[in-house]
Image 1 (cartoon, protein in one colour):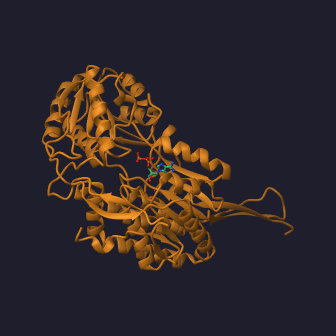
Image 2 (tube, helix red, strand yellow):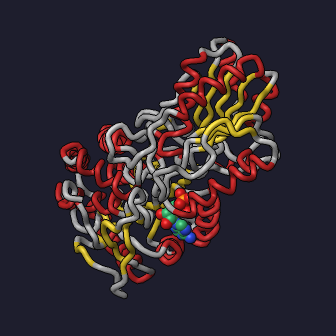
Image 3 (cartoon, rainbow, N blue to C red):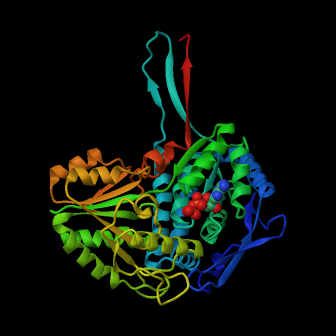
Length: 482
Ligand code: ADP
């Protein structure tokens, strides 16, 4: 951890103070590639959360009262601080999360880009003058920060998922309480360090680690929290929605996915294979927009599976920090066991093991990149989020069948299709029930676009102008008697 040691914070940031948990307990942070403990962070609970919320609440009026110019200047400094520390932040991310260093660099770079985007969007949070239907009145809307925001973030993109929440919150004038995932807290705590370093006033950014249940319980029940923004599983998202209903908070939810990747007979085979490799194996398959199900049309099925499996079996599986690593370890034992169960289930139901199918020779949390052919809807991989390097391939006959199968899920986050038929591309845009659609393209996320799921994949959008909208209240004012 030598390179990034100066960025490691092993305490909570509450009201400008770096403090441990009240009970003195800690949680180990391990490197999933080696199992080594690289840091410890506080195991906080309800009381610390309440203090963090109080701090954010007390800091809110003054922070919201800064001029737009002052807030934008702070945001730009935060952006620059991330850029200046990009390499060390990327190494820290790989050390606690496991993804290849190239992916960590891209993630931290995108974090900086979100901060800059929202600094710019803050300048455009204007209201409106509304033509009055009644004489002697002026009608107008103005926009205001919602207040204290609580952000709960996952371990798979511990930096950029926070950037999409902290960026718009701070740009809008909100104060924040952040709870990073316990597996990857360092990439969350470092935001507290950088925010403090560039001059955000105390209490504006609070970060605390510990018991999800205790921290989450306080966040959902405390009336001072006006908005919760969450990225994680659909199961926990539903729980947070239910818990927060008693205090009627604004809720943004980025939840699970079950992305289809459809390859039509008329696809450019090489491009489809390139796309499938990235969309399936990025972050060892542990992203909510990763391909879960590959649907391949009968006429190209054999050629696609052969070419895809050849590339998959040649992938370099190695610790993320090793040169040329294309797939790192899974995040923990539970993830590894789940993958083993899903593969066993698929093979027991007639799946054809094309490549991979077991733990990798490297041992530990490494799993072989795997392709299973002749997948069917009876397999668990059809309905469950795989979240690992396993690609089930289903054969289909007609466009109609592919769309029907693709939409046959409670989720609706990302979808991908490869075709050279323009008319079909537009039909897919119309019929795929997904918040994100990539046609002949898989790297489709950027600060400029509204990222968000349909159906049980979420509520609200992150990125684009809509990404800041969720952090603003609209007030309407009527001035009469004119
Ligand atoms: P994942 O499968 O990505 O780990 P989770 O939904 O389990 O997704 O976790 C995402 C985030 O939600 C993590 O920060 C985790 O600690 C937090 N979390 C888990 N359970 C709860 C809960 N009951 N209340 C609040 N946060 C929770």
